[in-house]
Length: 316
Length: 211
Ligand SMILES: Cc1cc2nc3c(=O)[nH]c(=O)nc-3n(C[C@H](O)[C@H](O)[C@H](O)COP(=O)(O)OP(=O)(O)OC[C@H]3O[C@@H](n4cnc5c(N)ncnc54)[C@H](O)[C@@H]3O)c2cc1C
Ligand code: SF4
Image (cartoon, rainbow over all chains, first blue to last red):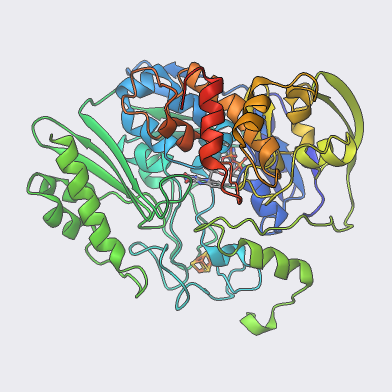
């Protein structure tokens, strides 16, 4: 690990300006993704701004009837919140399907959203990786790619966004709230938060350097039957091959987002009318233009079948 | 632009790369502890409260909570397995919650109440979970055991506190201590000897139910 200096500011404004002031500064929240990567010198910040003293650790009702989730709310606490369990079940379910109990006790809302979009070769510093070292190539293309993306990928990078929580937030139409070093606040729909790799896979989100996430807001509850189904190589404690977050209404209308398929939670609103006709026509629309590799072409069938199972479960 | 073959490689990179390359898929237990390289180490005073006792330490900012406890406070019960949050051998209870002490910095835990295996019980006054692990043979080599026991104690508290898990059928109902709840909640603690079923028995007994 590279040496770094450390500070723990007490307000969001101070934190954002601290991160902007120091070159190569990074925020640290739970540390479960950042320290993992710092140990391998994949992340090499020279200064850490500890955001654990900022408050931002409560869940409050919004005027619109939704919830504002502080950036520092731990994954365990978010999953266990009575309002989330009752009104946003898909979010609770997604959270408890991710990582382990120990990790969820540390992992924060903002940190979880910002976990790196990554692949095994990204971790392997002996391999070329355009994300880790722009311009070096991509070892995953032509390498072992069973776990990797089938859509939204590029010639530069085929990594998937590995998180579960954000897939549920995508189907819930969440909004990310931030503040920058000048104190300017902005709201980013979660749909626009994670970007596709194109030829700059090292840039994964819409955040500007030093911009601090303060909260994620959920609109007022939409009801329906909410399901998160995660298909993986083990029953627990593994990243998704495919996951489906779904909200299915009694009238048959539905929204779905997929994890494990793309460099960001994958949702195609324009295809959701097809869901009334069944999983196959919907999946065909949702994954139109997919470019799977030899290793991961099975994911398209798996996604369709998982969607089918989820719709069947939700529609009873 | 560099070619794959032109990468400047040193042994550290190789070790790190080899150990992490399957991390996303299978989480092997092969990552190794690493010697910090000597680039401008930043030292700072850190005071930790471990098992009710205060330790005033002078630490490199890079020091993980695990390394601080083992190498500086000399409490070596907590183990370093993977050092990447994958195996659970380093599990401690911090502020009432179990965490992977390898994936957090010591400096971030000043003022927190830190409990390690040494703080749960003593050889002549075992914690009920420690006693149950012995009774049910909840280990073989013992390396993962301190983490398993800390996790086991915290898991029962999590169930009592109504925190749901992946296998909780009804999100709006209270969770119960069932074998499947225990297995799911303990999945962050790997045991290479495979003592899992005996660990479930030990935890079930402590929870007040027969396996
Ligand atoms: C073994 C293992 C298994 C895992 N399995 C899963 C899984 O199955 N599913 C899943 O979804 N995840 C999984 N994870 C990932 C885990 O969920 C993330 O590591 C965690 O959510 C990150 O949160 P954190 O608070 O610890 O982030 P940190 O590591 O503290 O930060 C992550 C990033 O976010 C930035 N950041 C943090 N807070 C803010 C803020 N307020 N504003 C701006 N930037 C900020 C940091 O600078 C850093 O770049 C796994 C992790 C491990 C180690
Ligand atoms: S898929 Fe992306 S993260 Fe993986 S090696 Fe290629 S460029 Fe790197």
